Length: 446
Ligand code: ATP
Ligand code: MG
Image (cartoon, rainbow, N blue to C red; front, side, top):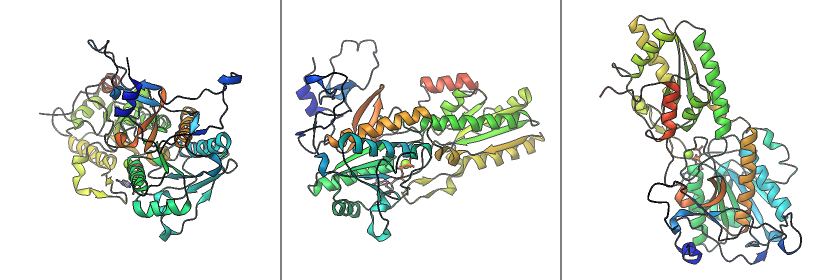
């Protein structure tokens, strides 16, 4: 049997709180009437993180490391709604669904809790820095009414500018009680450091992250918003590349998709549209030359079928372009363009072989990043935003909202930012990709 008390104290997944929640929530939301009127989530409701049932483990007792706290509205809240000033910031690259999350945050704050002081911080963390003089954007349900139909973020975004002390000074000057940080690993690293600094200053300010990773590469985030839209848009690009390749003489369609460290978009796209013959991802190194290299496999494919489609994730094959490496404003490595590199290398190879080919390179990345969210992502974003507000109101901080095993949960930011999700080359996803493309397990000569 699980001892909840012991468990709450020793959980790896324990979510930090600002203090005791003493105020009765204004939310009334049950189909039942009378005393049962509200289906609040209790603080001792958890789900299992790992749902594998391996031989020998069926009878284990749950330890504290297995449990994730359920997200949702609490009966007792930490903040008094009438006194709250909430801030929202979006940072990093664009991703479908940013506006949907902003809309859900604003509507839940406004309608569920009656909070009417909501400030949008513009242009990412830079919007906090006085030297830029960027005014905040007051937000209300009218302003966010139809923003979910558009891609991008109404608040704008940026990289760099994360001067944590200066940001905290601004947060204090603005009298913010809670800040919602919508962004990727960099943003959530920043959010964690901001929360630590505020804690050091004895400020009871809730920092709640809504993780954005179009690459789906944050650990413990089993499904990131915008990912499904990204795959749908990538499928459209591959379909065009296939048509171009099919109708040319020895046509080669080359498509580059997002995936700096992880090939999830490429893997899912290849499975969604069976026209892809070769998928290259950052997790698996590949040789170009030699009997077992990519070029030889491509040549065999063209001799057999006279057209081919290659799908490459942006982080794949970076060893071929090491000399191009630089850093962006946030300190992220600027990747070499594997698409352009492959296009030229493949063309040179077939010229040397004396074989006529026609190669078309499509890079849909920015079209994908700026697309509006599809209906499934829209639903997901709306629910992430709603749960983020409940988490903040209950006094959680340094917390991310995530969906694990089909349930919305609270995750300590600290855990999620320290590890990346990658495609397991030995796992079922990659096995299915190999099955769908029939490409060799490895393009390696050794
Ligand atoms: P994307 O998925 O687009 O890369 P991201 O959130 O990782 O999203 P970044 O540009 O890396 O995007 O970071 C966003 C913001 O977070 C920037 O303002 C950056 O300066 C800040 N940031 C990044 N890493 C840290 C860190 N370790 N500490 C504090 N702030 C950080
Ligand atoms: Mg990042």
